[in-house]
Length: 271
Length: 219
Image (tube, rainbow over all chains, first blue to last red; front, side, top):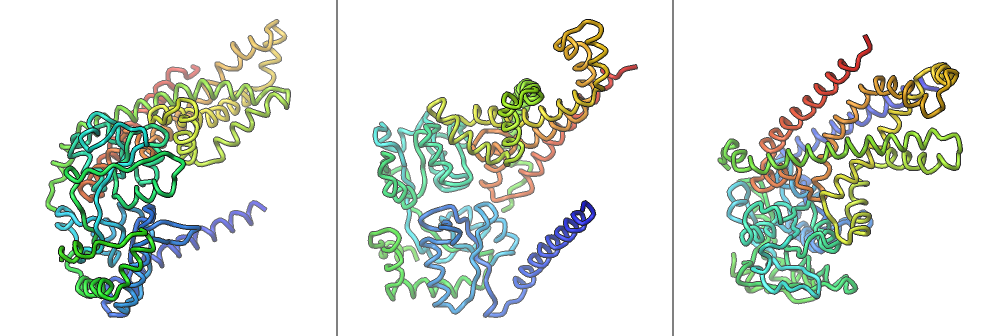
């Protein structure tokens, strides 16, 4: 019996190793081939509703629908893979992935290492607090414990006010953990992209939350598709994005997820 | 791009230092509370009455049978807020590590105690000691000596396991490495730096356990 078991476990280990190897080399060789119809590896961090999240194991969200539309327009086949926030950057840097659509704000810092598409989304950081909170502006966050997602522009926006790596800024790997921390009173506020926290407040009316806006402290941000530096895909998908703007697909997807009409003029003005 | 790793480490040195202190603190708290609680759980499990020992058996089953990471999330977002009214990464960290460690320590101790020959207890009892005295003066001193090496193992795993607390924003080493990596979009510098620090911590621990073993060695 024990012998059988050990043979079985050995087999299982071998199978695991083989699958790990084959999938590894598979993506490696596909990254080298530059045929136009190869399957693109598109990575994201599917913990960020309504942009990308898992619903009963299926990836859903605004970005997922936009990517579907972009794939249709550009004729590219792709595989959307949830790898997590930090690995998104690591994969593009090492070019093991072709692109990422994951609610990534275009920043000068990131643009030094990566290429960005034309902006496809307008976003502002806002503050999520409980209804009875005294916080009315970003300046009120000084001295308070604030929860953010690690490495996001929300973190940068808060740290600009309270100081970099201030111990009162609690950094979580996912935005939902940060919001949970606030609801358990481990923090008084969460700072993140408006769409995410507005949707959370709207979907959880029983939790007595409100969203505070501070246009002076938090500048508008634009999301872009991120590529490895000097990617040949950028012009293809830039054209596809404009096609979605002009044929109404963008507006349809936007309304589906955010219930309001998009500010297309500001987006186009950024191009 | 072009950011010098040395500069980044220098920038984050104070955070890595405080992170190291937190890691040491979490580990020590886990070791102390885990050992005390583990000893109690061990005696509870060894009770002859099945009904009385059942809760201790359940305790060990749960904390050994579920991932520590899951336990940390449960305790941080569930148990601690329910008791203290608000979540607190440091309390959650200490509680989670101690409870988890206790389950393992309990089993290590049980193995140690049961490895002492029954005849020793019988001899002690025939000398007029009661059960408690036999345990306290005859069995336990020998058991402690035997369980030191596996305990050392547990302590070393505990130091490494404390890195999981980064998920609940407990400001320990891994938490700061993640912050560092996220800020500069780098991998090697932060994680190699903390690997080095973890190595120093675990090597120190095994050195201490070795010395203790030698001091307690029966000549």
